Length: 33
Image (tube, rainbow, N blue to C red; front, top):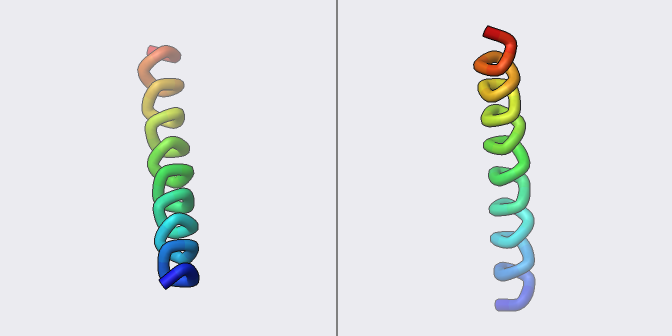
């Protein structure tokens, strides 16, 4: 159960970082315009 929780947390962290990267790119593109 602990291992599963850890894995889930890692997956969420990875997804969040990926999503944040996309948002930052969009924001930069919007600011440049």
